[in-house]
Image 1 (tube, rainbow, N blue to C red):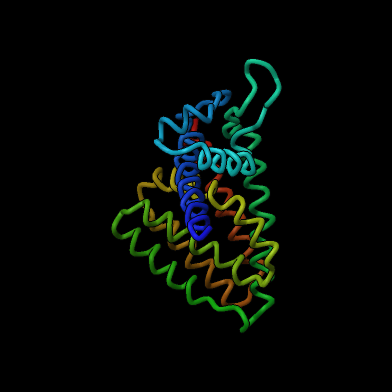
Image 2: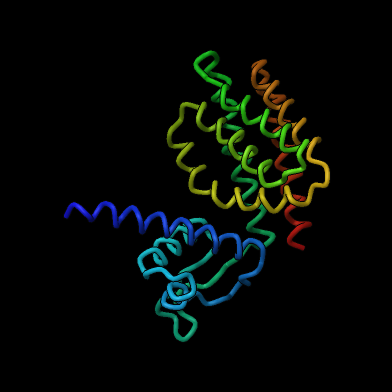
Length: 224
């Protein structure tokens, strides 16, 4: 009995790793829409048991990247959905709605909000831009935006974001890699944080909307 929690945690970690790998392949198109994902095949390919595979597929289904068609004949099971143009529109519309609310709530909290980590993330963005390190830039970018949810004081809002955060992390990695010069994006984050610190919610939300529109456009370009 004492070993059971360790096994559970290990399976969860493997499931998260496998979900990330499949997520990257799905979003970048290496796994095409309609691809049939078989648990046994995935377990053999990634040298894991079926437990982590089931965990990974369950998570990807929650994110809308795969769909279950059990009991539908030869093509039943789990199929890749991918990201259609409609999916991208839905994802970015949802994020804009969630994050705009998070920005407004965090500003309303005033001095109760702690922007230390957001400032640190901005410093990381500027350094990554200087180093032309797109992957480090993407990590700091996600850390920066996560702070709006963390400082909003709304746990349910943060929980919704956590469901889609892994998808956007991969999306951001793809779009950031398209930017030859990361300084304009870094500067945009500096300006957004400045608006938040000054308590200018309307300006901050406008800047956020422009930022997300640019990201959506770059993703469509990257994925063709």
